[in-house]
Amino acid sequence: MGPLRRFDVSMPLFAGMPVFPGDMPFATRPVSSVQRGDPYSLSALTFGSHAGTHVDPPSHFIPGGATVDELDLELLNGPCLVVAVAPDATAIGPEEVAGVPSGTRRVLFRTANSARWARTLEFFPDYVAVTAPGAKALYDRGTRLVGVDALSVESDPTHRFPVHHFWLGAGALILEGLLLAEVPAGEYRLDCLPLKIRGGDGGPARVTLTTP
Image 1 (cartoon, rainbow, N blue to C red):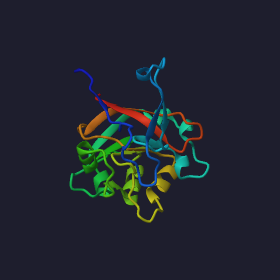
Image 2 (image 1 turned 120 degrees about the horizontal axis):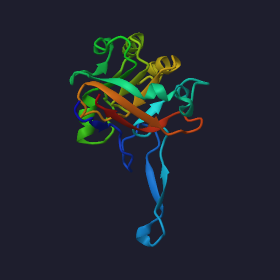
Image 3 (image 1 turned 90 degrees about the vertical axis):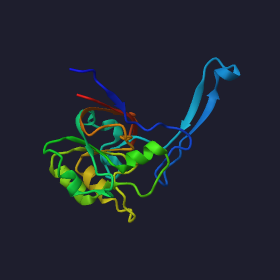
């Protein structure tokens, strides 16, 4: 076996980073600093629960649903499949899901979004997202964790959010804000640990992919 390769697919947190419209921007403020003579450096951070790379738990949309601190870490960690969606695809529907082998529990989609993030970390509204039929087709194949290289798994101008309601209502999980430009399609080990926020409706996470 050759050496393992680990990809860090997490979005950095920084002032001016992209956020979903309406979400709180990231900000940092120094409380103490060794540069100004304090004994140690310490910063105050302000950011939303869905900042950067993050996990959507059921409670994000489902009343009484599991919160981020209650999630099954076994579902968030383990073998996963990275699927490369055609660069000209404008959405992830049943056609893009058709090649996912039945029984694949964790699926991450690399779309044209990742190439755009690689050029500049600025929000763009015309991101590639999962459609409601695509979400159902994926769930029917046995997938229970879907990951996307956008700040939202769906694009819905009506704000009814059918994909979130269907996926989270079924007890499945969503991983958003991935940076997958350098990750070839294929099988990996997913390691995802969201912040353990008690009662949290979202969990920023450091996420890596390791080659088998």
